[in-house]
Length: 405
Image (tube, rainbow, N blue to C red; front, side, top):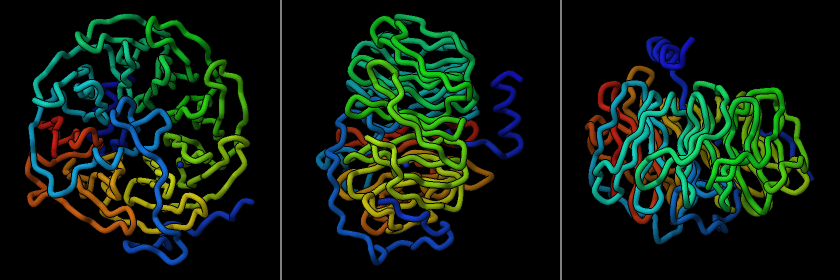
């Protein structure tokens, strides 16, 4: 079945999916604490400084989702601009670099928008773009239904065409670091020269590559459909270690302070030693994890219906909130003791809205007054860059990219 037809059949059925010494596995998510910091959690003392640009779907190459304190806007937030997006199926989480915002509509259109004004810089129509783009110094990396493409950031013209592989409908996203694009695509993870598109190495498992990678200290980490978490040498692709889980992995990896966090499709959150692959802790949550972030103090896990915060060192569940709109939304940004997420939403409408939470307790600091206003019908993101929040989403006929500050 062609990708577009399959997407439409999912939407019609209401099942569109959205596009982290060992301790024992923790309690099921049903027993997790609510808002308010749980007993046993240490003081909130983050160590990750964060990224000033959001070049990959989870922010920095390590996938932390953290931004510097100075870049995190204090609520209340106001609406700056909206950019209309063609298509009806949905959108990807935006990425932001060099004063431009990039996203696509899960169908054919890739957009580049001026971050300050909301004006279109360019748009292109590759065949079935998949996953969020990633932005290098010289190229925007866009996996499509036929090839990995390198587009000129200024004009959108195709600079190079990479490997030709068919991929899944809801594909993971590439990450660019030190001039190399690490692209999960088909049955492999590719390392591709971001300047000319040359394939530097390929790691193949024989199963669909389903997890967005993280790159830290010369190592690439990613989870795979074959139930393993892999650590590879970033320069050569040589395997450093693998960790066997009890489930398939579709979640991104996130790395901080010598630990790599990810999660399996059936809800096991894992924190592994980044050097050895030994399990540091694990915790079972109540539904499929969609995104993982880590700031050095806490690991954040957004599932299909809750957002959790765990003590990074011990795995203690510090808080959770059911206001997170994971079912039809995905993504989070953390900065200045705040988490920027999507909340609300329902099975029948794509009507989540951005919110700001306190990372120490999970309590809501801000939501817009009018959740159903078209300005705030957003699910994908939010991402934070230079004092502004960018997110995408909207109703079935009103897809949009929005900036708040």
